[in-house]
Figure 1: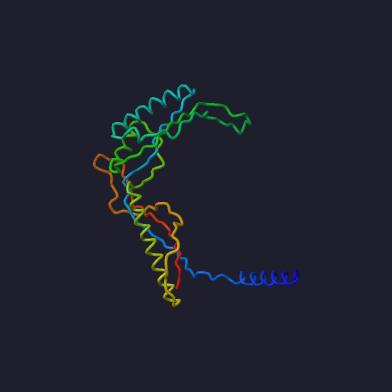
Figure 2: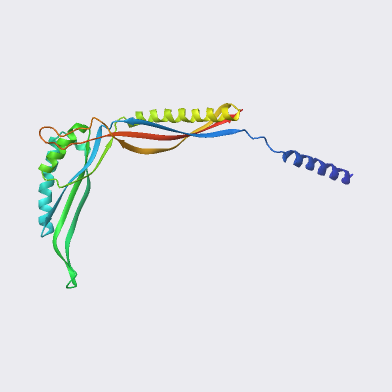
Length: 234
């Protein structure tokens, strides 16, 4: 009896193992990436304005820098820039070293450099040229890191997303038609990443006015995104 039960159990186990070993049918899918772009003329500028001063002592250099920086800050305020759009991005005090390689003497301190800079957000790009001119007149001798962006970047990016989906759908339709199959349900959609805004030439770049304001060209930016989509195929 025991032998009969054992044989029956082994037969059942083998049957179950054979059934579970059968391959599970897999859904046929197609994965396509789409690319979308949208252009926009930037309407916001971020720029770093600062002052660097040199003097025999650190105290003298700081005093000179503070006076010049106060004049620059007054100029920025008079230009209509809100306090929330001005932020210090650098402050440094460094000795000015002089080297004498011929006499092989150790370097000596001949003075001190003090630098102070702020990042200014200009929300009216047309006012950027006059601001730069006024800043230099007020004593700013460090101007760099000018960048442009759009206050409508989210809206423009959504347009790029729509274009990326259209591009993926177009490619998927092309491939399935060529392969003699058809698209089924969308199984997944994911953003593969965004591209940094790329500047483009813009014909209406501003020029210097009669007063000689600094010419500024904000250009045009291209916002881009990639989308990956997966479909069932029939």
